[in-house]
Length: 86
Ligand code: SF4
Image (cartoon, rainbow, N blue to C red; front, side, top):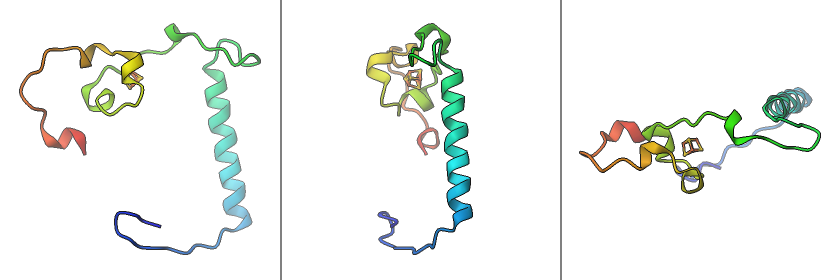
């Protein structure tokens, strides 16, 4: 269902769709686990992750309050061009 357009689309999943989805998920999980310091204990270290620190990204990030990136601490300047937020 596309809520924006109010349209519903029907799609019949195939076993190949499910296999591709499972493979994608397994790859994504493996990628995330590789970023951990200790995958067995599900432990990460904050210093292993570079902050994006870009207004275009951080301005829309749900974690910005806890992350407190420098880019959001800057004094307000002229309004950002609308195309940055598309
Ligand atoms: S605010 Fe979000 S996107 Fe920006 S550096 Fe922090 S976690 Fe990353």
